[in-house]
Amino acid sequence: MTMTRGFTSLKGAGMITLAFDTALDKMYVVLRRGGKTLSSKIVETTESRYHSAELIPTIAAVLKENNIKPAEVNLIATNIGPGSFTGIRACVTVARTMAQQIGCKAAGVSSLEILSKLNPTDKPTLVVLDARRGRYYVWKDGVISLESEKPDTEGYFVITDDYPAVPLGENALSAPASLGEILAQIAEQQGGSDWQKLKPLYLQPPSIHGK
Image 1: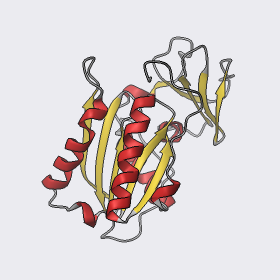
Image 2 (image 1 turned 60 degrees about the horizontal axis):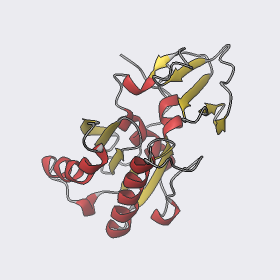
Image 3 (image 1 turned 90 degrees about the vertical axis):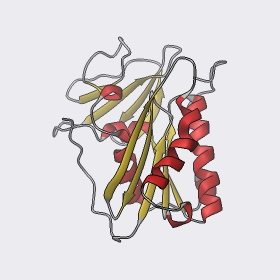
Image 4 (image 1 turned 60 degrees about the vertical axis):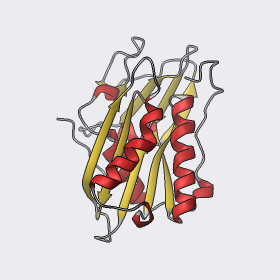
């Protein structure tokens, strides 16, 4: 099983975190209290419907199952990209709206930073994702960039998607670890801020299909 590392313990046993992600190939909704996961839901993408369409019903179901009211949530965390343009727009909009209505803090985390936590080794991490149009999203030494050429992978633990031009490393998007839980842990470590500061991370204009 893929291990994650590099997190600190959450302070405040009663703190409730709601994290969700529709930017990648699956939808993640995670509910945590005091640093412990209460629920972790994963919804697969279907060809006929964006998984982001299931986001609000899934959030409502997770809160109801755990007898938690939206107003009790202290921190809302979401993936700000890069990834599906439609998915990023959906989860950031829901996060901003909920945080504003509830009056809680919001935290945005890059999909590349989330994936970087899948490195179980002591090697430096290199995350490379297909950005389409012959480009690559790259996370290296904590810096996010959009590259037109495949980066040098020598000496790095490489985390990548299914794109055949970057075949080395772990198939991160199909990894057994819940990326939603990783998102929640990073957000808890950051602490969050005002919802108005939550912005999508668009490194390039969307395609005509919004992916």
